[in-house]
Image 1 (cartoon, helix red, strand yellow):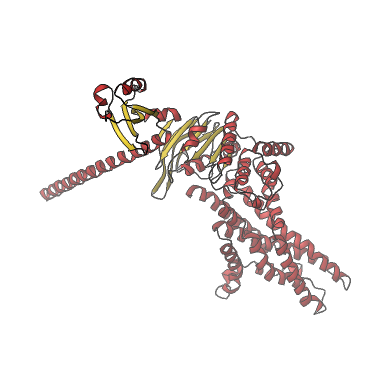
Image 2 (tube, helix red, strand yellow):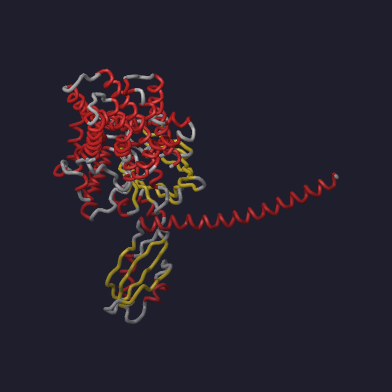
Amino acid sequence: MWAVYKKELKTYFLSPIGYIAIGIFMLMYSIFFYLTTILLGSVDMGNLYYATARYGLLLIVPLLTMRMFSEERKNGTEQLLLTSPRSVTSIVLGKFLAAASVIVITLILSIIYSIIISFFGNINVPTIIATMFGFLLVAMAAISIGTLASSITENQIIAAIITIVALVAPWFLVDISKIFSSIDLIDKFMKFPYGLISISDVISLISITVMCLLITIVLIKRRKAVK
Amino acid sequence: MIQVKNVTKKYGATIAVNDISFDVKDGEIVGFLGPNGAGKSTTMNMITGFIEPTNGQIIINGNDISKSPRKAKKEIGYMPENVPLYYELTAREFISYMAELKLVKRNERKKEVEKVIEETGLKEVQNKLIRNLSRGYKQRVSLAGALVGNPDVIILDEPTVGLDPKQITEIRSLIKQLGKRHTVILSTHILSEVSQICEKVIIINKGKIIAIDTPENLEKSTKEKNGISVIVEDPKGNMKKLKQKIKEIDTIDFVKDNEDGTKQYVITTSSDIDLRKKLFEVLPKEEIVIFELKKTETTLEDAFIKLIDTVKVDENKNEKKKTKKSKEQNSKEEGKSESKKSKKEEKK
């Protein structure tokens, strides 16, 4: 797992993708920082993370996940991975964790803004930590959806579009039926900015992540038999 | 040691590989030959565990590739067709990554990578991005990726495609060296390559093995007649009468008139007779001047084409038989059903 993880993480920063992802995050985060705190004179960081999760992840996650398996499949390097003694599970997990690590890097960078705010008022540290924890869970669920999308097509753009649609569609589908709110990741992030860690939200985010990764593993194994 | 037992691969209704079995012993260099689309790559992909066979078993050094893949895959180094590589890495980084993937221990990794770079002659370019390497070097990086971790079995899918003649000879000599320490399977459709490098040839066509033998034996077995090519000056036209003088001759075929007035003929005899000595004695007596006289050799190429053609002919025959049979069966069945009907009617 760690062999794939190290190589993937390195590749994010050998190509511009890692820097672009972090750049987009910081850009959006800064804009929302201005809109939600400076403009309103507020010290509440919750809205900031919520807005970044809602709109920022939509751009960053497809960027991080679209090439994961699509590129390997298109270039044939998939053959190198699948004929190595490593298991499919460890390959999928390695790639997933590498993408999640980029998100962790962005979250660490976001702490700077909390430090800035702390000079102007009292910030609520436990709330911010809870929010960041929620943000990471949502990002991981989104990455797992992206991983799955990337494993079903050779085309990176299609993989990216599938990921975006899977993230956005539930916002509108909720109007048709309440059931769709269960696959709306942002819906599960509502309570974290208030400092509330709801067990049901945590469990549903983790189960979405695990489910998507499992389907990815099964699909790749299945393709070995069909191909 | 590789054992392939009754392996079949189906894609829906089409059968890519049909019930093939063969063994490759330790230290052998085996060539996999066949026309395009014969099932070479499919078979190699199954041996390396990239795809799973529909039926059958593949055992590498006693480990079944689908039951204990970790152990079996550790013994294999694979260089796939089309040389897939990570272009954003340097040659050294790539080889090191492959070593890591292949479970080479951390403390041995550096030494192992160093050794493989030395072996494949990549020292000058080891720190260049793979993206910027020439085709020949890319091929070598891919080969290095297959060699790293010192696997027992090395599988090379068309290793010399797209290389210039010098690079081809280099890669070939490298493969020959590898054969001393590893078991090597390579696929190719360049026949001279096989007769130069390989100790054993497996010819595959339409998913079936049609021959397993040494290149020499294959050449011999397809040779039915001895041919001698002669270029002569024959002003009196005595060549045609030669058959009466030497009784062993089966045929004398005129090939062409040369510009300098000489003529070329091919003389054939049955395979166990060598007529060269006799021709040297007889031709001058008939006032025929010999310019050139040599044995025509059957090559692996002839063997290959002949084997594939015979399979086609057999198949045509079989198909005809089948259609005949099926027609007969149909008529029989019709007869049966008719008789059943009549029986039913009788019952009524």
